[in-house]
Amino acid sequence: MKRAIKIFGLGLAVLISIGILALIIINTQDLPSYEVEPISFERSDSEQAIERGKKLTQMLCANCHMNQSTRKLTGQRMKDAPAEFGEIYSPNITQDKTYGIGNWTDGEIVYLLRTGIKRDGQYAPPYMAKLPLMADEDIDAIISFLRSDNPMVTADPTPDTPTKPSLLTKVLSRLAFKPFPMPDQKIPMPDTANVLELGEYLAHNLECFSCHSADFKTNNYLDPPQSVGYFAGGNQPLNRDGKVMPTANLTPHETGIGNVTKGDFIKAVRFGIKDGDALAYPMMPYTQLTDYEVGTIYDYLQTIPAIENEVQRAIYD
Ligand code: HEC
Ligand code: HEC
Image 1 (tube, protein in one colour):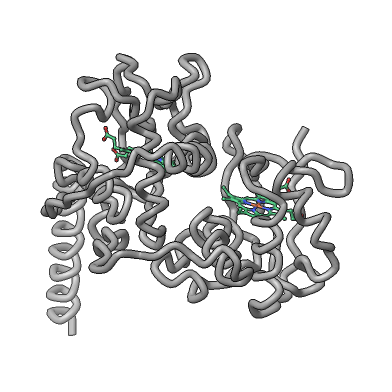
Image 2 (cartoon, rainbow, N blue to C red):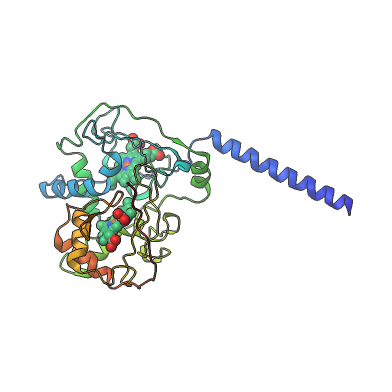
Protein backbone atom coordinates (compact mmCIF):
# COMPACT_ATOMS: atom_id res chain seq x y z
CA MET A 1 0.00 0.00 0.00
CA LYS A 2 2.69 2.45 1.09
CA ARG A 3 4.65 1.54 -1.98
CA ALA A 4 1.64 2.20 -4.22
CA ILE A 5 1.22 5.63 -2.67
CA LYS A 6 4.92 6.34 -3.20
CA ILE A 7 4.71 5.35 -6.86
CA PHE A 8 1.55 7.39 -7.28
CA GLY A 9 3.21 10.37 -5.58
CA LEU A 10 6.26 10.04 -7.76
CA GLY A 11 4.10 9.84 -10.89
CA LEU A 12 2.22 12.96 -9.85
CA ALA A 13 5.46 14.84 -9.16
CA VAL A 14 6.75 13.89 -12.60
CA LEU A 15 3.51 15.03 -14.26
CA ILE A 16 3.53 18.35 -12.43
CA SER A 17 7.18 18.90 -13.36
CA ILE A 18 6.42 18.18 -17.02
CA GLY A 19 3.49 20.60 -16.85
CA ILE A 20 5.59 23.37 -15.31
CA LEU A 21 8.38 22.74 -17.82
CA ALA A 22 5.87 22.96 -20.68
CA LEU A 23 4.57 26.32 -19.38
CA ILE A 24 8.12 27.65 -19.03
CA ILE A 25 8.87 26.63 -22.60
CA ILE A 26 5.62 28.11 -23.97
CA ASN A 27 6.35 31.36 -22.10
CA THR A 28 9.73 31.76 -23.80
CA GLN A 29 8.20 31.22 -27.24
CA ASP A 30 6.22 33.43 -29.56
CA LEU A 31 2.58 32.86 -30.37
CA PRO A 32 2.08 29.83 -32.62
CA SER A 33 2.75 30.15 -36.35
CA TYR A 34 0.94 28.70 -39.33
CA GLU A 35 1.58 28.39 -43.01
CA VAL A 36 0.43 31.40 -45.03
CA GLU A 37 -1.57 30.48 -48.10
CA PRO A 38 -0.79 32.87 -50.96
CA ILE A 39 -4.00 34.66 -51.96
CA SER A 40 -4.42 36.73 -55.08
CA PHE A 41 -6.91 39.49 -54.60
CA GLU A 42 -7.73 42.27 -57.00
CA ARG A 43 -9.21 45.24 -55.27
CA SER A 44 -11.60 47.45 -57.19
CA ASP A 45 -10.59 50.88 -55.84
CA SER A 46 -13.98 52.12 -57.06
CA GLU A 47 -15.31 55.29 -55.50
CA GLN A 48 -18.31 53.37 -54.21
CA ALA A 49 -16.11 50.70 -52.59
CA ILE A 50 -13.89 53.32 -50.92
CA GLU A 51 -16.94 55.11 -49.52
CA ARG A 52 -18.42 51.88 -48.14
CA GLY A 53 -15.00 50.77 -46.89
CA LYS A 54 -14.68 54.00 -44.93
CA LYS A 55 -17.92 53.26 -43.07
CA LEU A 56 -16.96 49.64 -42.41
CA THR A 57 -13.50 50.68 -41.20
CA GLN A 58 -14.96 53.29 -38.88
CA MET A 59 -17.38 50.73 -37.44
CA LEU A 60 -15.06 47.70 -37.31
CA CYS A 61 -11.43 48.81 -37.10
CA ALA A 62 -11.09 52.42 -35.93
CA ASN A 63 -12.24 51.62 -32.41
CA CYS A 64 -8.99 49.69 -31.90
CA HIS A 65 -6.53 51.12 -34.46
CA MET A 66 -7.38 54.85 -34.29
CA ASN A 67 -4.86 56.95 -32.43
CA GLN A 68 -6.38 60.11 -30.97
CA SER A 69 -3.16 62.13 -31.21
CA THR A 70 -2.28 61.33 -34.84
CA ARG A 71 -5.99 61.12 -35.89
CA LYS A 72 -4.90 58.19 -38.06
CA LEU A 73 -4.92 54.40 -37.80
CA THR A 74 -1.47 54.36 -36.20
CA GLY A 75 -2.49 52.13 -33.29
CA GLN A 76 -2.78 52.60 -29.54
CA ARG A 77 -2.66 50.88 -26.15
CA MET A 78 -5.83 48.81 -25.86
CA LYS A 79 -7.04 49.72 -22.42
CA ASP A 80 -10.19 47.67 -22.81
CA ALA A 81 -8.40 44.38 -23.52
CA PRO A 82 -8.69 42.13 -20.44
CA ALA A 83 -5.51 42.46 -18.35
CA GLU A 84 -5.14 38.64 -18.26
CA PHE A 85 -4.34 38.81 -21.99
CA GLY A 86 -1.22 40.88 -21.35
CA GLU A 87 -0.26 44.37 -22.46
CA ILE A 88 -1.87 44.78 -25.86
CA TYR A 89 -1.13 47.47 -28.46
CA SER A 90 -2.84 47.69 -31.84
CA PRO A 91 -0.30 48.30 -34.63
CA ASN A 92 0.04 51.05 -37.23
CA ILE A 93 -2.06 50.05 -40.27
CA THR A 94 -1.50 53.21 -42.34
CA GLN A 95 0.24 52.96 -45.72
CA ASP A 96 3.73 53.59 -44.30
CA LYS A 97 6.04 51.00 -45.85
CA THR A 98 8.21 50.58 -42.74
CA TYR A 99 5.86 51.10 -39.81
CA GLY A 100 2.45 50.47 -41.37
CA ILE A 101 1.15 47.94 -43.87
CA GLY A 102 2.32 49.70 -47.06
CA ASN A 103 4.42 46.65 -47.91
CA TRP A 104 1.70 44.07 -47.31
CA THR A 105 0.01 42.71 -50.44
CA ASP A 106 -3.78 42.90 -50.62
CA GLY A 107 -3.83 39.09 -50.46
CA GLU A 108 -1.87 39.13 -47.18
CA ILE A 109 -4.37 41.55 -45.63
CA VAL A 110 -7.31 39.44 -46.84
CA TYR A 111 -5.72 36.30 -45.42
CA LEU A 112 -5.24 37.95 -42.01
CA LEU A 113 -8.80 39.34 -41.93
CA ARG A 114 -10.30 35.98 -42.88
CA THR A 115 -8.13 33.57 -40.87
CA GLY A 116 -6.24 35.55 -38.19
CA ILE A 117 -2.83 34.59 -39.62
CA LYS A 118 -0.41 37.46 -40.20
CA ARG A 119 1.90 37.58 -43.20
CA ASP A 120 4.82 36.26 -41.13
CA GLY A 121 2.63 33.28 -40.19
CA GLN A 122 2.08 34.37 -36.59
CA TYR A 123 -1.41 33.95 -35.18
CA ALA A 124 -3.25 37.13 -34.09
CA PRO A 125 -5.22 36.22 -30.91
CA PRO A 126 -8.90 37.18 -30.44
CA TYR A 127 -7.98 40.76 -29.49
CA MET A 128 -7.62 41.35 -33.24
CA ALA A 129 -10.97 41.18 -35.09
CA LYS A 130 -11.55 38.63 -37.85
CA LEU A 131 -14.08 38.63 -40.68
CA PRO A 132 -14.74 34.99 -41.59
CA LEU A 133 -18.30 35.57 -42.86
CA MET A 134 -18.06 38.94 -44.58
CA ALA A 135 -18.94 39.19 -48.28
CA ASP A 136 -15.96 39.50 -50.64
CA GLU A 137 -17.36 42.79 -51.90
CA ASP A 138 -17.22 44.25 -48.37
CA ILE A 139 -13.68 42.93 -47.84
CA ASP A 140 -12.79 44.66 -51.13
CA ALA A 141 -14.38 47.85 -49.78
CA ILE A 142 -12.21 47.77 -46.63
CA ILE A 143 -8.99 47.10 -48.55
CA SER A 144 -9.82 49.76 -51.17
CA PHE A 145 -10.32 52.23 -48.31
CA LEU A 146 -7.07 51.23 -46.56
CA ARG A 147 -5.26 51.98 -49.86
CA SER A 148 -7.11 55.27 -50.52
CA ASP A 149 -5.90 58.85 -50.01
CA ASN A 150 -8.12 59.35 -46.96
CA PRO A 151 -6.04 61.05 -44.20
CA MET A 152 -6.94 58.25 -41.74
CA VAL A 153 -4.81 55.79 -43.71
CA THR A 154 -2.13 57.72 -45.64
CA ALA A 155 1.44 56.86 -44.59
CA ASP A 156 2.46 57.88 -41.10
CA PRO A 157 5.80 56.78 -39.60
CA THR A 158 4.60 56.16 -36.04
CA PRO A 159 6.43 53.04 -34.79
CA ASP A 160 4.50 50.17 -33.21
CA THR A 161 4.76 49.44 -29.51
CA PRO A 162 5.31 45.69 -29.21
CA THR A 163 2.47 43.77 -27.60
CA LYS A 164 3.35 41.60 -24.61
CA PRO A 165 0.93 38.68 -24.70
CA SER A 166 0.58 36.96 -21.31
CA LEU A 167 1.37 33.30 -20.62
CA LEU A 168 -2.40 32.69 -20.59
CA THR A 169 -2.74 34.14 -24.12
CA LYS A 170 0.15 31.97 -25.29
CA VAL A 171 -1.30 28.82 -23.74
CA LEU A 172 -4.84 29.52 -25.06
CA SER A 173 -3.43 30.34 -28.51
CA ARG A 174 -1.95 26.84 -28.57
CA LEU A 175 -4.87 24.96 -27.03
CA ALA A 176 -8.14 26.84 -27.52
CA PHE A 177 -7.93 29.59 -30.16
CA LYS A 178 -7.46 28.43 -33.71
CA PRO A 179 -7.25 30.30 -37.01
CA PHE A 180 -10.40 30.26 -39.12
CA PRO A 181 -10.32 28.38 -42.43
CA MET A 182 -9.90 30.51 -45.56
CA PRO A 183 -13.32 30.39 -47.32
CA ASP A 184 -13.02 28.16 -50.39
CA GLN A 185 -15.71 30.05 -52.29
CA LYS A 186 -16.62 33.68 -52.81
CA ILE A 187 -19.07 34.95 -50.18
CA PRO A 188 -21.86 36.92 -51.90
CA MET A 189 -23.38 40.17 -50.64
CA PRO A 190 -26.81 39.85 -49.01
CA ASP A 191 -29.80 40.93 -51.05
CA THR A 192 -30.34 44.42 -49.64
CA ALA A 193 -34.05 44.34 -50.58
CA ASN A 194 -34.50 41.19 -48.46
CA VAL A 195 -34.98 42.62 -44.97
CA LEU A 196 -34.23 39.46 -42.98
CA GLU A 197 -31.24 38.49 -45.11
CA LEU A 198 -29.66 41.95 -44.76
CA GLY A 199 -30.52 42.14 -41.04
CA GLU A 200 -28.86 38.81 -40.34
CA TYR A 201 -25.78 39.78 -42.36
CA LEU A 202 -25.36 43.04 -40.46
CA ALA A 203 -26.11 41.47 -37.04
CA HIS A 204 -23.32 38.96 -37.66
CA ASN A 205 -20.73 40.97 -39.58
CA LEU A 206 -20.91 44.15 -37.52
CA GLU A 207 -20.16 41.93 -34.52
CA CYS A 208 -23.41 42.75 -32.71
CA PHE A 209 -23.81 39.05 -31.85
CA SER A 210 -20.22 38.83 -30.61
CA CYS A 211 -20.78 41.35 -27.81
CA HIS A 212 -24.47 40.64 -27.26
CA SER A 213 -24.34 36.84 -26.66
CA ALA A 214 -23.30 35.13 -23.39
CA ASP A 215 -19.51 35.19 -23.58
CA PHE A 216 -16.76 35.79 -26.16
CA LYS A 217 -15.34 32.38 -25.22
CA THR A 218 -18.51 30.48 -26.16
CA ASN A 219 -19.32 32.42 -29.34
CA ASN A 220 -19.38 30.50 -32.60
CA TYR A 221 -17.82 32.86 -35.12
CA LEU A 222 -18.36 30.56 -38.10
CA ASP A 223 -22.03 29.88 -37.27
CA PRO A 224 -23.19 32.70 -34.94
CA PRO A 225 -26.68 31.31 -34.07
CA GLN A 226 -24.85 28.36 -32.43
CA SER A 227 -23.29 30.76 -29.90
CA VAL A 228 -24.31 30.13 -26.28
CA GLY A 229 -27.10 32.57 -25.34
CA TYR A 230 -27.28 33.93 -28.89
CA PHE A 231 -28.13 37.64 -28.55
CA ALA A 232 -29.40 37.21 -24.97
CA GLY A 233 -26.72 39.58 -23.59
CA GLY A 234 -24.82 39.29 -20.34
CA ASN A 235 -21.39 39.21 -22.01
CA GLN A 236 -18.88 41.32 -20.13
CA PRO A 237 -16.73 43.53 -22.35
CA LEU A 238 -14.71 46.21 -20.55
CA ASN A 239 -14.90 49.98 -20.82
CA ARG A 240 -11.77 52.14 -21.17
CA ASP A 241 -11.26 52.14 -17.40
CA GLY A 242 -11.16 48.33 -17.48
CA LYS A 243 -14.59 48.07 -15.80
CA VAL A 244 -17.18 45.48 -16.81
CA MET A 245 -20.01 46.70 -19.08
CA PRO A 246 -22.63 43.94 -19.31
CA THR A 247 -24.31 43.80 -22.74
CA ALA A 248 -28.06 44.07 -23.27
CA ASN A 249 -30.39 41.20 -24.16
CA LEU A 250 -31.51 41.82 -27.77
CA THR A 251 -33.74 38.75 -28.18
CA PRO A 252 -37.52 39.28 -28.60
CA HIS A 253 -38.15 38.33 -24.94
CA GLU A 254 -39.58 41.02 -22.63
CA THR A 255 -36.25 41.04 -20.77
CA GLY A 256 -34.74 41.83 -24.19
CA ILE A 257 -36.21 44.07 -26.87
CA GLY A 258 -39.68 42.48 -26.72
CA ASN A 259 -41.18 45.81 -25.65
CA VAL A 260 -38.80 48.10 -27.54
CA THR A 261 -40.22 49.80 -30.66
CA LYS A 262 -38.29 49.86 -33.91
CA GLY A 263 -37.95 53.64 -33.58
CA ASP A 264 -36.40 53.39 -30.10
CA PHE A 265 -34.08 50.60 -31.25
CA ILE A 266 -32.88 52.73 -34.17
CA LYS A 267 -32.24 55.66 -31.79
CA ALA A 268 -30.23 53.42 -29.46
CA VAL A 269 -28.10 51.91 -32.24
CA ARG A 270 -27.53 54.96 -34.45
CA PHE A 271 -27.21 57.61 -31.77
CA GLY A 272 -26.51 55.70 -28.55
CA ILE A 273 -29.58 57.07 -26.80
CA LYS A 274 -31.92 54.97 -24.66
CA ASP A 275 -34.79 56.55 -22.71
CA GLY A 276 -33.04 59.91 -23.03
CA ASP A 277 -29.88 58.46 -21.49
CA ALA A 278 -26.53 57.87 -23.26
CA LEU A 279 -25.37 54.30 -23.84
CA ALA A 280 -21.79 53.82 -22.70
CA TYR A 281 -18.61 52.48 -24.32
CA PRO A 282 -18.02 49.90 -25.73
CA MET A 283 -21.48 50.37 -27.30
CA MET A 284 -20.62 52.90 -29.98
CA PRO A 285 -23.19 54.93 -31.91
CA TYR A 286 -23.45 53.48 -35.42
CA THR A 287 -24.04 56.82 -37.17
CA GLN A 288 -22.74 55.29 -40.42
CA LEU A 289 -25.81 53.04 -40.68
CA THR A 290 -29.10 54.18 -42.18
CA ASP A 291 -32.48 53.85 -40.44
CA TYR A 292 -33.31 51.16 -43.01
CA GLU A 293 -30.20 49.12 -42.20
CA VAL A 294 -30.71 49.29 -38.43
CA GLY A 295 -34.40 48.50 -38.99
CA THR A 296 -33.43 45.27 -40.78
CA ILE A 297 -31.33 44.24 -37.73
CA TYR A 298 -34.39 44.87 -35.56
CA ASP A 299 -36.62 42.82 -37.86
CA TYR A 300 -34.11 39.97 -37.93
CA LEU A 301 -33.85 39.97 -34.12
CA GLN A 302 -37.64 39.51 -33.92
CA THR A 303 -37.20 36.13 -35.65
CA ILE A 304 -34.59 34.56 -33.32
CA PRO A 305 -35.43 32.50 -30.20
CA ALA A 306 -36.59 34.64 -27.26
CA ILE A 307 -34.37 34.03 -24.21
CA GLU A 308 -35.19 35.22 -20.70
CA ASN A 309 -32.18 37.02 -19.27
CA GLU A 310 -32.53 40.16 -17.19
CA VAL A 311 -29.29 42.13 -17.54
CA GLN A 312 -28.59 45.01 -15.16
CA ARG A 313 -26.96 48.00 -16.85
CA ALA A 314 -23.72 49.09 -15.23
CA ILE A 315 -23.67 52.82 -14.52
CA TYR A 316 -20.34 54.28 -13.38
CA ASP A 317 -19.74 57.93 -12.72
C1 HEC B 1 -10.58 44.60 -30.95
C2 HEC B 1 -9.49 45.38 -31.48
C3 HEC B 1 -9.19 45.30 -32.96
C4 HEC B 1 -10.08 45.45 -34.00
C5 HEC B 1 -11.57 45.67 -33.91
C6 HEC B 1 -9.29 45.36 -35.21
N1 HEC B 1 -7.98 45.15 -34.92
FE1 HEC B 1 -6.46 44.87 -36.26
N2 HEC B 1 -5.21 44.41 -34.73
C7 HEC B 1 -5.49 44.53 -33.39
C8 HEC B 1 -4.33 44.08 -32.63
C9 HEC B 1 -4.22 44.07 -31.11
C10 HEC B 1 -3.38 43.65 -33.56
C11 HEC B 1 -2.02 43.04 -33.27
C12 HEC B 1 -2.19 41.54 -33.22
C13 HEC B 1 -0.89 40.82 -33.04
O1 HEC B 1 0.13 41.28 -33.57
O2 HEC B 1 -0.91 39.76 -32.42
C14 HEC B 1 -3.95 43.89 -34.88
C15 HEC B 1 -3.29 43.63 -36.08
C16 HEC B 1 -3.75 44.05 -37.33
C17 HEC B 1 -3.00 43.96 -38.56
C18 HEC B 1 -1.56 43.42 -38.70
C19 HEC B 1 -0.63 44.58 -38.74
C20 HEC B 1 0.81 44.25 -38.43
O3 HEC B 1 1.65 45.12 -38.66
O4 HEC B 1 1.08 43.13 -37.92
C21 HEC B 1 -3.79 44.46 -39.57
C22 HEC B 1 -3.45 44.57 -41.05
C23 HEC B 1 -5.05 44.82 -38.96
N3 HEC B 1 -4.99 44.58 -37.61
C24 HEC B 1 -6.13 45.35 -39.65
C25 HEC B 1 -7.39 45.52 -39.10
C26 HEC B 1 -8.57 45.87 -39.85
C27 HEC B 1 -8.61 46.15 -41.34
C28 HEC B 1 -9.61 45.88 -38.97
C29 HEC B 1 -11.08 46.12 -39.27
C30 HEC B 1 -11.71 45.22 -40.19
C31 HEC B 1 -9.08 45.55 -37.66
N4 HEC B 1 -7.73 45.34 -37.77
C32 HEC B 1 -9.83 45.47 -36.48
C33 HEC B 1 -6.68 44.96 -32.84
C34 HEC B 1 -7.86 45.13 -33.55
C1 HEC C 1 -18.05 45.98 -28.31
C2 HEC C 1 -19.28 45.36 -27.81
C3 HEC C 1 -20.58 45.74 -28.49
C4 HEC C 1 -20.89 45.68 -29.83
C5 HEC C 1 -19.97 45.29 -30.99
C6 HEC C 1 -22.27 46.05 -29.95
N1 HEC C 1 -22.80 46.33 -28.72
FE1 HEC C 1 -24.70 46.96 -28.35
N2 HEC C 1 -24.25 47.21 -26.38
C7 HEC C 1 -23.04 46.89 -25.79
C8 HEC C 1 -23.10 47.24 -24.38
C9 HEC C 1 -21.97 47.05 -23.36
C10 HEC C 1 -24.39 47.77 -24.15
C11 HEC C 1 -24.91 48.34 -22.82
C12 HEC C 1 -24.47 49.79 -22.76
C13 HEC C 1 -24.99 50.51 -21.55
O1 HEC C 1 -25.57 49.88 -20.67
O2 HEC C 1 -24.80 51.76 -21.49
C14 HEC C 1 -25.07 47.76 -25.42
C15 HEC C 1 -26.37 48.21 -25.62
C16 HEC C 1 -27.08 48.08 -26.80
C17 HEC C 1 -28.48 48.46 -26.97
C18 HEC C 1 -29.38 49.08 -25.91
C19 HEC C 1 -30.25 47.98 -25.40
C20 HEC C 1 -31.14 48.35 -24.27
O3 HEC C 1 -32.33 48.34 -24.47
O4 HEC C 1 -30.61 48.65 -23.18
C21 HEC C 1 -28.82 48.12 -28.26
C22 HEC C 1 -30.17 48.29 -28.92
C23 HEC C 1 -27.64 47.56 -28.89
N3 HEC C 1 -26.60 47.57 -27.98
C24 HEC C 1 -27.61 47.08 -30.19
C25 HEC C 1 -26.43 46.73 -30.86
C26 HEC C 1 -26.35 46.44 -32.27
C27 HEC C 1 -27.52 46.40 -33.22
C28 HEC C 1 -25.04 46.19 -32.55
C29 HEC C 1 -24.39 45.92 -33.89
C30 HEC C 1 -24.65 46.90 -34.93
C31 HEC C 1 -24.31 46.30 -31.29
N4 HEC C 1 -25.18 46.64 -30.30
C32 HEC C 1 -22.95 46.08 -31.16
C33 HEC C 1 -21.94 46.33 -26.42
C34 HEC C 1 -21.80 46.16 -27.80
